[in-house]
Amino acid sequence: MIFSSNRRPTQVLSIGECMAELAPTGDARTFRMGFAGDTFNTAWYLAQVSTAARVGYFTAVGDDDLSQDMLEFIRDSGIADTYVQRVPNKTVGLYRIHLREGERSFTYWRDTSAARELAANEDLLSAALDAADLIYFSGITLAILEEASRDTLLRTVAKARAKGKVIAFDPNLRRRLWRSADEMTSKITQAASLADLVLPSFEDEADWFGDSDPEATLDRYFELGASHVVVKDGNNPVTFRSDGNQTQVLVPPIGVPEDTTAAGDSFNAGVLNGLIEGRGIYKSILEGCALAGHVIQQSGALVDVG
Image (tube, rainbow, N blue to C red; front, side, top):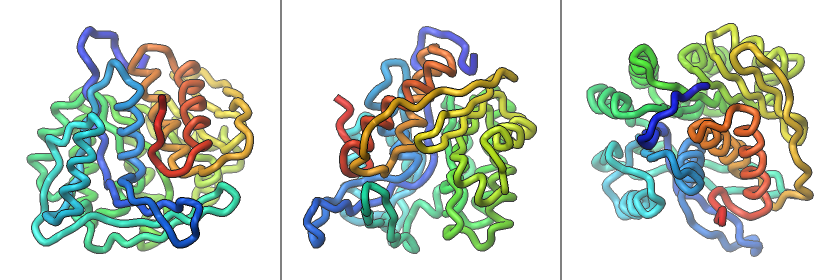
């Protein structure tokens, strides 16, 4: 088991960037504003479905009204903002969702995002990680940071793992956020070597690491030291290896998706919740599939889970 059983809630800390989201409403010229971002989406869904986790978010926001609105949304979502930093004269990133037949693409505005400075205070970062049981971050978390801050984050995560913290990592490969493909694959590999649980998507891994099949992805991340690797592959079976045992989980049919935004993020939340609840990796993956299947039948990154 990735988590030892205990009677207290598991303290989860998700690290990354929450952004203002412009989502289409059906009218091509009308958008609904919300707040979302890959690791925040996972934190949000985990906070909604879990009875055994206390979820916090580690990021930085600006000092403007939009940043204040985001902070209030984080708190109202049941996510602790203890380690959310305020950066003077900055704001939050913004992105717009474009939808075509349920598939999404994005336009981003994030050059002045305060989250790019989330790892500037190493003492605060260390304190936040020390207070957590489970630490979750992604390749996008790494990509938005300057090199020195990225190294600070990885160094601090390594220290946390050495203290017995559980580290979960989604590679979330996004080439446009990196200076080069080599930099991206190198830093993703370094981060994955610090993780107990890796949650890659096969399509991305095939594109940037040349993996021939999900088993190749499993092999690569397992060799880096992960004890659990769960490979998402769209509607194809989820392939996983846990403590050396490998199998697949069939993805239940879900019909035509309305919007695939946050499909992987919500899947990750379901997997993490199942593991925290002690249901084991197979049932946890089924929980992730069910949650993601529900999410993509609605529009937007964050939807009601009932």
